[in-house]
Image (cartoon, rainbow, N blue to C red; front, side, top):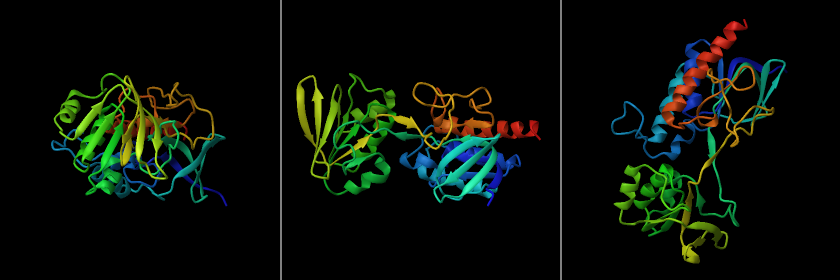
Length: 305
């Protein structure tokens, strides 16, 4: 049985992928979008405060659902499955999803974003190691919990501030001498009584029997243990490109290189949002990338008719 063919395959249901789907449909392209979370990782953001038009901010989940509904209303198809493989043969893109169904398209837009990095330490997969304070923080509500956030950027600050409303105490732990976050976030943390910033401190291990009970830490004063009920990771990300079954040019960190049309080194393959080599990974720029890739994909197809 031949795979169903589209003008564009879009990988990712985050802001970049959903905006690309919305614009692709408005430009008349038959479009299928792979991913199973409307809004992608926006659900991890309690409130988006830097998107134009939302003076009081907007919840990340609410924002993602609105984008999904808009793209769906334009006619983009959403099987709500993840893409397990995307190949490129004979000028076409061949896709296989988690239900083992095959699809093909003349163009593809990779907008799968990025995934959080785990610490390469013992017991890295232990229960109690979390990545989303909005999703998993409520599990600790009403327990006078002691929680830790590992990281030093704005994401780490947002995690700590969210958890401070739930936990009895929150440690923000990072290796550098100073946090690498905006001043407004740092001021908020310093003004929150139950948040303690531990600079120059490295987490070297997790302790506990199945469930996390303590962090092994190292600082200028030596090695120590810090009793915690849970930890939330915010140490960085890696590009979500594992579905690509062919070679494509990337930077040293693995993010996709693109030209001024946001096309990768493969003809007809575009990249949008955090998965590409960008100097400003934000929701706003991801949406802009999505719109641009849809337009350039349409032009690419026009030239080849």
